Image (cartoon, rainbow, N blue to C red; front, side, top):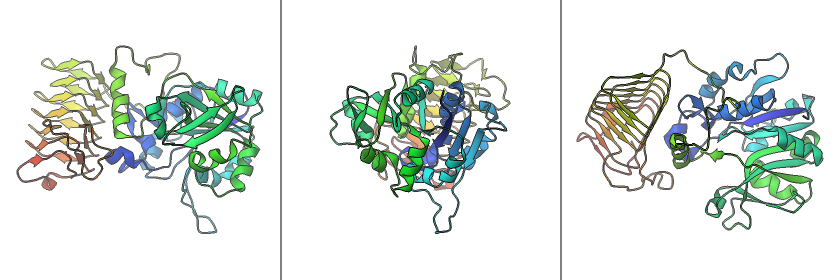
Length: 413
């Protein structure tokens, strides 16, 4: 395998995830019970034999930094190579904040130059997938490419969400269009790029373009040796509330497309010292994923529970994603909800109530499918009724709720 530096881009804000990214970057959002989204890119690296990894951070990075530490869960706590966190910092010309993916790498070109590598593998820190990067790097080396991008087939109805790539019979990319209204190809860029090191350095020094997908790649594919690597496996961009919710619940399928139990491709993460999940005598659990430290005395149906979640007797959690250490008190009901870490749902509260699917007034394009979100460490008072497409902001206290205990569909508190 060619000598490779991996750079994971994990610094952007993600407004499409609403309250889930109000106090953390998307890469640090929990997923699939015990994991964080960035765990997938990191695990792919080490499972592919790549141990020279840098993570570029910027937006609200504290929880991400705490999760990554020195990289020990991924065997990246090494004297040579290993995990490095690259933070934005002021520059002599008054810059420092990174405006896009290309800008983020440009601010760290001195670091790239110092690496004794042949290629730079750029990854997004906010995708869910399992991928051996070895074949991608092999193709890049064999074709003597300037840039090789991983692509996959998508539905024509989803093409407007991605960078769309047109590929000739020889595998060379002849066109790249970012989020077209109408697409003439169904091959979408996965945001995974291998650059020849010196080509990347020269490219970023010759332009002030701030983003690879929006600016650089559409300009260079016709003149550079650009190739496509067609990836056939599972891959999910969970950058919207609906995509995040669906990807979590897809893990509950009889044969899920993403196999988290594969001993040949382990997804590594930080594991806290918690006891096994406890299922009470009167509890009922159906088709759900429970993590360590969960205590269930009520009913959980079709849901994903992260570590430390408590579901009290008489409580019902249905078709929901509940993140770490949330407490669902007696008699409370959750229906099609995403509940963030440390939330407490009071006794008898009903979150996701009724059949009114009025879109969220503040973000109709993000919350319109009936999901209700409760942000980090919010406190939901006892007996309240919260409708659909509602967003409860992080750390909201009971005093913020209406006196009559009714929160209509489409509201934000």
